[in-house]
Length: 278
Ligand SMILES: Nc1ncnc2c1ncn2[C@@H]1O[C@H](COP(=O)(O)OP(=O)(O)OP(=O)(O)O)[C@@H](O)[C@H]1O
Ligand SMILES: [Mg+2]
Image (cartoon, rainbow, N blue to C red):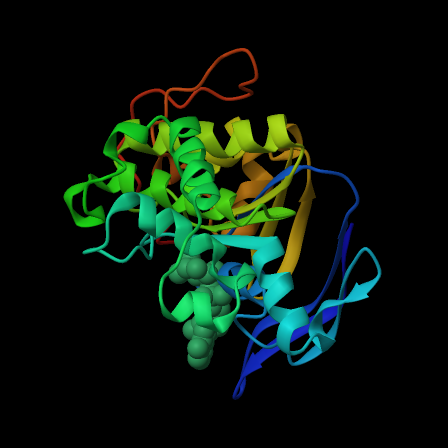
């Protein structure tokens, strides 16, 4: 499906992502972990062309992503919907319109400019909101919603794009544990029910363990781990985070209470959302 070949991104003298190669060949839910500055956001943003890669190749079903231009590029950006830590909604617009904005790439400039949506668009948006459990908020302004609700609106907007994959950059980093769980459950449900790739940057190990089929660990622009969560031992985690013997996994916990039917690690109740500052 998606293939990275020696992909590099430099910012001046700084190498954010260093000759990274990996393949996603089935619809997995993948967590990307690593300390701040490891290159997680850059990796995701190169996929949907928000950040131009410096060298290397990214292929999606043999299509050269980095060479796309104009309408083809916009089409691709619709195909890999992005969910951000800060939701990126339009605060004063109502929720259903925010969701319909996910369709804009699919409309011509005229329709986009004059904000014309069809009855079909409204129905699709309401269905997406319903799926995220927030259809009752459809007519409120986005700014009236809680952070967790806003992130669900952002996910509904992503669904509205009918994407081939979802890229989520720290989708729960601004949320309390309860809302973090709701949002992660929603992403997992989209992965399972729609059979889509969900590639998700996460600050915390327990979330990656609980929700992902595969974990990619980044350190200083390199992929230093790529495997199943079960292989993510404390030693491996220590290596990913570049930590010493005093490394404490509790410091990477979000305290999400997870469904034990697929959980490999139960977080317990630890300090919320602490980034690994080692
Ligand atoms: N627009 C930019 N201009 C210059 N340097 C940048 C830019 N974006 C990222 N970098 C640098 O690239 C490196 C990787 O950054 P990136 O944002 O990908 O890390 P990250 O793993 O997402 O970190 P965090 O967990 O803090 O979000 C860092 O050294 C960062 O300072
Ligand atoms: Mg980041």
